[in-house]
Image (cartoon, rainbow, N blue to C red; front, side):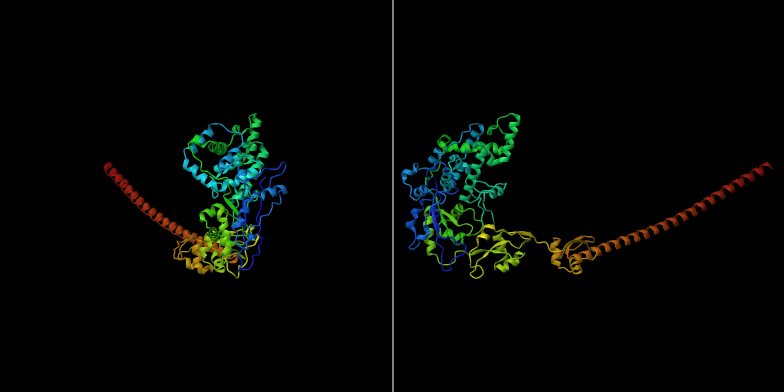
Length: 564
């Protein structure tokens, strides 16, 4: 059984004096021993190869590599683990051979598997990039898989989850090599805060993933269903099984109705397994990976800058971050991340250089904001530029920093002499809120001659505030009746609302009166015009009547004359 042998150097949250530099403890990973019958697996890897580092320590630095036995392991196993493995014990010089010997899952053979085999075979460059990334982590993962007595196919799962990229993030916010979503990561005790995200931590995420897969296998008793549940969720698989049972259908992986991604999930793993088993059949050549630890675990006792740690170890920043991808900030807090991973040979160099280092180890520290502040105010208190504060703490514009938030700020020897406590390192959060001014939101309408300046003066606020609240420039003009948003104290807001109401009522009354006056004039004009028209009509009628009368008189006279 592989055992965890931790190098301890008296870690403490309270730092030593400024002149001291912290020693580091080193632990390495060796091949696994056999699991004792009936012994429950522990949650840690075996670390026995660290004994080889003792000759590399600086004079007087023996405390930096104290190897102690795993308290969870048996005495016999501890004794075995304290000894360096011989080449004969390693059996396989190449890690791929060791993986092949541990295959234990039933094979899946269908068209989807062949489809994925063809997909990978047609992309040799992609397969090469994946195996290059995997070479950093695969030995450790195989150690953990074998220690738990699990099939080594599980060590290949990051190929299809993330292509062995510990920085991978999915559209569902799944993160890390094993692709944990936030809620599942929290359930398996993967810390996620402003300083670190253990979903990306190589060792912590591997422990959590294998815990989860073991649990799923215990639920379903079938590795194909367990893998489907890892991708789709155990509840979804249980419901799919229940549907088939109700319909009298088979309940194995191939007969369940599931999303396309889950339908291809196990065939992808089977395709990778087939390629690892016989790469030449697919025209591929796998990069050789030594059956040997790639990295060592170095215990740290003091906060240290990421850049300084990489420089002391003599590794490029890209390589340091590949082994320590959980870091969210430019400083490593010893209380929260008491160990870092370094390439096997660079761990020795790190210890030597750290012993010789003089000066501060960390230029950043954590500061808990005592009250709600604007970023500019917080930057002034912390002693740095506002833009830099926003950038390092990922604070967007237009936001307030709420009381109790933890910010990363420059460290000085007076205010921030001590390292960050474990309480802050493990529980730090940053809470932001929109920078909305206090008071009640009030809407007023601009008058004919109103400007931003006149409204600001009327309601006791600044022109800049009115412009900001309405997304206008301070010199912007206002149209009559334009709605203007103001944030005013309750009393002022009530008065403003009353004024606005009175003003609106006044305008409505004035408009009504004007309408009535206009209507009255119109009625008068209409009546006068009607009277005049009537008079004209009457005159015309009289005239026509007179003509008719005259005609009738003339006709009568004619008749009289004719008669006579």
